[in-house]
Length: 306
Image (cartoon, rainbow, N blue to C red; front, side, top):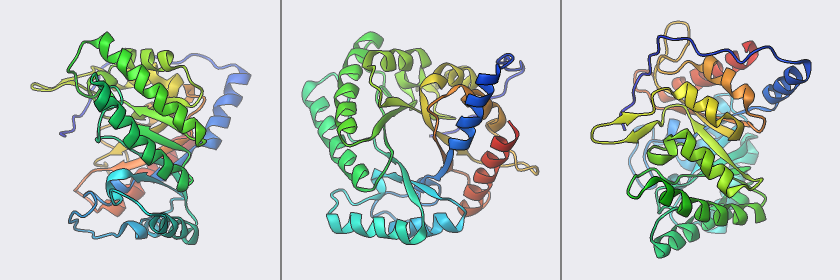
């Protein structure tokens, strides 16, 4: 999907003066943030595909550690479609040897838990329950899923089915000790009001949002975008528990050129459950490893200065 630069002429409104208790809360949030590496930053083909870097998935923990990461995300499309216990054991061993831990398992694209068709919805939920089992076996803290990314039925009808599907999947995730995070991933899910209604409708303690910096396509052909991603993040911030810190290119000062990281992380100070900042580098002007490293350093700089 094509990326867009969001350019705004007006400054983002200030959050106001913080009380001492509010300041303490924000400092606690900063201390608790873990920066993880999403495999798509380095491995941009799914299971069985050809990729120029030719990094074996079982080597990903070692490569991540070499770049300074203590946490990694997992992506279901990088794994074999059906995993045996031996493969999971090998991945856990690779993480242990490299001294890295699991953060979030990213799922989606194999059915919609908010599908109108009951059978398709049941099939999707069954698929993602399997991947929740995998996430638990990998000692992940959360599973990311998507719903509402394609607008095929009316707004309220889609919300009804999404609430039903997310609630069932979240209850299963809870039984495994995992959070379920829904990502703003285009379509209805890139409408903050729809996502807030989803969170309020599901109303479970282990349900939250994985906020993506750049997934704001509301409609396609022609593309229509949510007008202000910073305002979108502000609206979603109370529910955000993890993020996809998308990056593509950097200026000579190490700043990302498509998203104002400082502004985004300032907004995330209003996210009391925010824990994981996932690095997802998609650029081609510099090496993938260099891009992942630069993104991590930028996040750390921002956290130390906001």
